[in-house]
Length: 204
Figure 1 (spheres, rainbow, N blue to C red):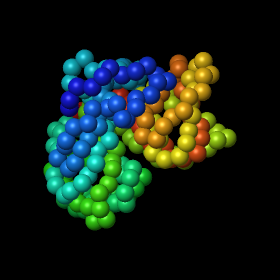
Figure 2 (cartoon, one colour):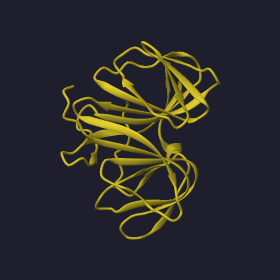
Figure 3 (cartoon, rainbow, N blue to C red):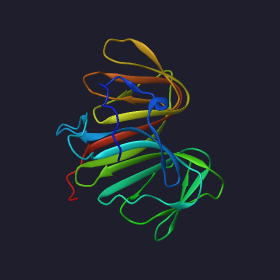
Figure 4 (cartoon, rainbow, N blue to C red):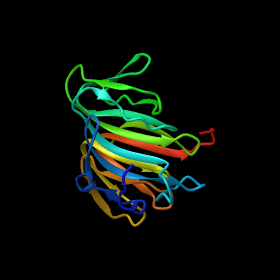
């Protein structure tokens, strides 16, 4: 896991176009953020090796997914039709249907319908438990982002505000950091990936 700029405060965005782009075994990858969690479940920069990592990665050819011992990987297709992930058995990862697997178990990726763009979430077992939910935004109802949550707009138009009430635009594939005290909330029309990170008491 390579180095990345420090996390912004809750209620601020990370612009994907400014994230470092690097090759990974299946294409290119932009590392959005990585870090750890406080005991209260707030996002923070890692003091040593990170316990979670979030990236947008293209899958442009078949091959092996990177092995990350002690981590779980949640893969979500955000552009394209389907990604086939093969471990002991094949898993068809359709668009907006997250798949979580042990990242320490060998797995290969196949492309039955062509290239795809994915959101990759890695979480260290025993430290962080991660999940990805797909939400449809509404102009009438605000979506709050709490401690330990990040949101990525995959399509549509949305705006967000924090405690001071200032409204800002959220661009497609930019990531917004949540926080209880900052009262972060989003509304608009489109699809949102909600990433939730919580302390994990399981043994690593």
